[in-house]
Image (cartoon, rainbow, N blue to C red; front, side, top):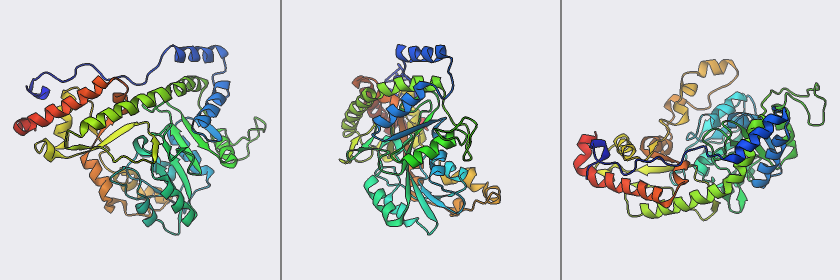
Length: 409
């Protein structure tokens, strides 16, 4: 037996389930929107989506918008955050979790993540609070709910607002309450690889009628829902989704529960198999998580369990075997040029750096960027045989690396 990287037969040659997934239902919905000739954001499918998604998350109000980045910006604006305000956020997320704060004129303050969950650490968040702190953006990373009891208590103690960034976490549930029901407002993404998708799109969800009305107004050029078309009451923009997006998303929403169950079953099979394979560790289980969609699996990689094979060489070997493991973020958010090289430009706009980003060192976030590996959610949308192929490839690479590591390098 030889590694595929060296000319051996790969464990797997067929692709994993493709994403997005669609069927005749999406085609029918698109044609209905097309034939309606109402293609913009005021088609009945949009209201159907807003009400259906809010109902699925057990929230009172849903406001659709162009994408998840816009959703975060609008949610923060609806909380009336702006210049001089600090907002605590994880450094282990997509840039929008922090750039949306900047777009409101507020200042992101990065706090470290928990090594057992990859979510923002409540203790680190509390240590980052200053007299300027007004809110926390809590990201449910990879679909795993954050420790919302702790964040609720922290917010009450310090009179802070909570924005739940649930771009990865559609349908996730923490201690009986779906994500989004713990903070002041939550945001979701429908971007191409998200758990339901129309290529782009976003949703803001909340139990507050006041916040929902503000969000709707921001997304609709400052109008009021019962106001005239040419009456504008606040500074807003056009952040609406289209009828075509809403039509597809309504069908995708109906597909989601079954897909969530399938991923959960395959994840359980994968986790059980990993008990016999050292060197690739998943986050610890938590009984308070009642439902998790497993959008993105993040593993700790231990090279010593693979003959000292560096992470990049391990990834290359696994990909050659047909398994789509990939590296995590190359660095925490505060290492991006946006925060390192643009401080002068941002300061001219009234923004100030609350931290010395070039010198900031948050050890857990730094470490997972160096040592973590990812597996996307579509790998869990197939059969148990697909999961068995992942495990078989891991065993093969682990078995052969003691004598093959030098050649892999």
